[in-house]
Structure formats: C-alpha cells, structure tokens
Amino acid sequence: MVIPSNVPAGTIPVENVAVHAFEIPVDGPDGMEQDGTLSWSSTVLVLVEATAGGVTGLGYTYGDVATATLVQSKLVSVVTGMDALAPASAWRTMFAELRNAGQPGIGAMAVSAVDIALWDLKARLTGEPLYRALPGFRDEVPVYGSGGLTNYPLPRLISQVSGWAAAGIPRMKIKTSRDPSADPARLSAVRKEAGDGVELFTDANGALSRKAALYWADRFAGEWRVSWFEEPVSSLDVEGLRLLRDHGPAGLDIAAGEYGYLTPDFGTLLGAVDCLQADVTRCGGITGLLQVGGLCEARQLDLSAHCAPAVSAHAFCGVPRLRHLEYFHTHVRLESMAFDGVLSPGGGALRPDPGRPGLGLSVRWADLERYRVYGSGG
Image 1 (tube, rainbow, N blue to C red):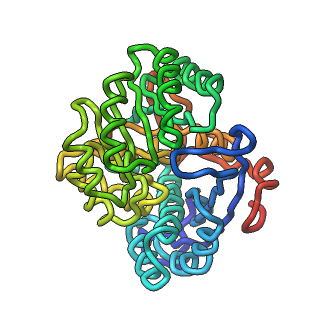
Image 2: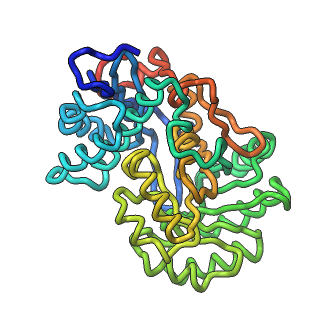
Image 3: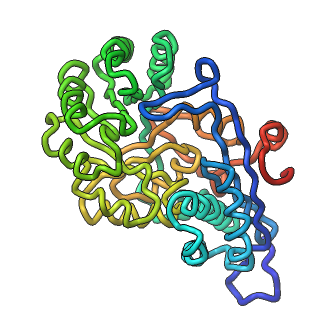
C-alpha cells in the first residue's frame, strides 16, 4: 500500500471512481422470469470501482441503467478525494448530495454500490477480508435456496429443489400467488421432493389482498408446513402486514423489507413483521445495513439478508440478529458469470474466505463485455 505524501497522516484519498453497467438475459422459460407481480427478461448489474493507493475496491447493485448514470453525475465527484479508510463519512456526503435528486429508490441504490466499493477498498487496503473489517458477530451466514419462479414448469421446479438439497441447503423458497390456483400442485411437488426435514418458504411479492393472504397463510401452513410467508401483501401496506403477523397461523413468520431504501423505511415495518429483510445493494450499502441491524437489535427482531450473496455473505456477518441469507438463483447465476471468487454453500451456509482481502472478488471483464450498456472497458 502506497500512501501519497501530500495528504494528512492516516488518510488515503480516493483517486478514481469508475461506473459500469451490464444487462444480462435471464435463463427462464422463453427468456422470461416471473414472480407474483412482475415479469422480466434481463437483470442489470451496476458495477462501481473505487481506487486509492494503487488498490481497487468493487461494489454493485441491481437496477435500471439510470442508477449508473446517477452514480456518475452525482456521486463520483463528491467521493473522489475523500478518505478511503472512512466509508461512513463518504456515505453521509453522498446522501446529502442527493437531497434534491432523490434519496430513496435509485438514489439509495447508487449510494449502495459506491458504499460497498469503498468498504471493499478499505478492507483491501488493510489486507483483511471484508467481514473482518466489520464489527463481526460470526464468520458464516446460513442460506436458503431461492428461486421457484412462477413460470417454471414443474420439472424445472423439482430439479432446482433437488439441487439445493444436494448442496446441503435445509431451507427453500418458491414464488407464489401469480396464479393461486396453480400453487397447490407446485407446493405439493416441492414438499414431496424436498422431504419433511426441509423448511419451506413462500414469497407472494405483494400479489394478494389482505383477506386472500389470510386464506393462503392458513393453507400454506396447514397443508405444506410452510414456515415463512414473504410479502403476502404489498410492503406499502404496513397495516396489512401487521394483520397477517397478528392473525396468521402460529409458526408462519411474516417477512418484508427488501424494498427498504432509507433507515426510516425499516422503522415503519418494526412491529408489522416477524422477521425484517434488508438488501445491502438497496439500503445504502454496508453503512446503511449496519444501521438497520442496530434497529433490529433494539427491537429484538431478526434480520434476513435479501439476495446479492457475494456481498451479503460478508456484510451480514456484521449484523447481530441475523436469521439467514437468500441464495437467489438469478443473482447466484449472474454473480458467477461476473466474478471470480464467489462462494458456494457448504453445510447450509456461506463462509467468507479469511485468506482473500475485501470481498475476495475479481471481475471477469472479458466475459461481461458483450453485455455492457454503460461505461467503458475495465
């Protein structure tokens, strides 16, 4: 590590921030993936590189290419020159810069990508894995297999479940509620393939009304022993979530929070869910996630990691009341295409490599280039 001589002792200025975006087609049937409320044909990876002292850190989020444009137009100039060893200071400055442009939504996602890159950079500069640069509570993160998209035919659904079982993952989640009449056959096939010892989760992605969600909560728990019902109603319907939490069957946890962007968003869900969720690539990055973790600790509420396993496996080691991490097929596939150094589950958990600094990732530029929709070559 080379520290420039013209800066105060103990600081390393960020020299450069580069922004890239890649649009990668999905591998779903007929080139589509579906859940309870949305269909999509591709996923955009917005990738940020932050360089200081001859070292480069990586961060990313998933969103529209406009997120990359926002990073470039609003955040690059304010982060450049700041201390690479103080990501939280840059985090506050970035959100202040977005006051009029808009802090929630793609604003928070843009901050998340840069913040993750800065934390990765700091860990690489100090020569330690990212999870050990955080206030560590653990060195592994339990995972649950996630996919089971609503447009999967039964053979593919069953194959995915058997793959998770073969990997030793004891928890599995499928999407439901786009066509509720199809869900009984899908759940029966999954329960039969997974066996009685596997925890079975469902995710409606906010597709149901309150009364329909209550009806299906009873059936999910009673007929297929489902123990997790994610976004039975929209996350915007906080009272509806509370209704499900208070009146749903015992043993069925209600979960939401993946669309939280700012810390107050998570505060509104406290008391309305049994387990809160947070997405480190949406909630302000690692700096924002640690604040959400503090909220959960104060309320004695578990926090579950939403997707982005390559980052989440490190970031959620710094969360005191962790439940588990969503090992989501779409992100697992994309991150394996985009990076070398991604983790594979063992014994139902992801374990960051203590011998690799930062996130332990390197970009597969040659493989990604044909998908580029923003920025220039890495």
